[in-house]
Image (cartoon, rainbow, N blue to C red; front, side, top):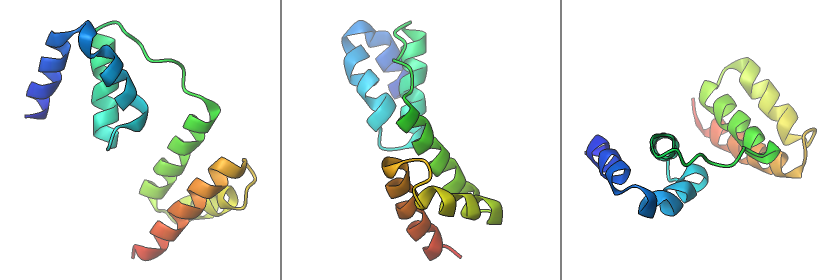
Length: 102
């Protein structure tokens, strides 16, 4: 079903670009954001470059998913604010979620 929806958005083309572009940063899941970028590539409607804050948000998500001892240590450093307030608040939230996981 997801593949069919992706194919349909590619078929729709330019009228769907603005909506799809919005999903690249605010999609409900990593898969939705990935598919939005995929659709834009297919339509040659590339997204703007990722900001520093966007890159740091990705770092936080990757570290949270990794969940290793090293990732948790680095997440603690991020949460202390070494890389800015926005990153610190995201990292603190991730640390809290990680604490709930075994």
